[in-house]
Image (cartoon, rainbow, N blue to C red; front, top):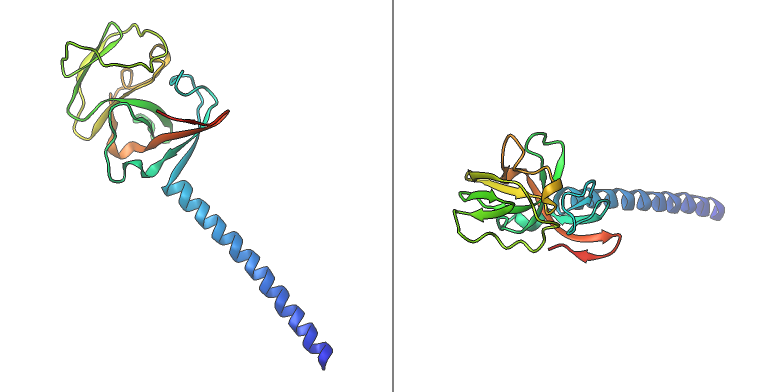
Length: 183
């Protein structure tokens, strides 16, 4: 009788152990899915359009939560759905906000017909093109890469802006090849 009770107890404890492992794995998968779909974006940078701020093949984390209660600000580096193909994701810097007029003259950016160009210390090299003037629609953002001479950005697109609902998150931390806060 005691042998049968011990066998039954081993069967039960093995089943409990297996169930606890399965439960642990399921919970881990659910938490991971929640974090990657609602909290962060894990991004690999495929091009040099944001050099020297973000380099080709850098890996970074963007926060999806950044714009839950706030709107993007000028200078923020955002990850968004490319307006001409929302299956693609792009990363660029916010240059002009909703309702602002943006113009690029001799590579320098002017907002709302200002006489003084935007201060952009992050630019890789002196840009050479002209664009605009263009007024950003309500709920839209005008974005450009930091490597202006080698960036496919709002200046070239059919739709010259990213709508608020296409913005996925704000670049936050580069973790490869080294750690660096994204500014």
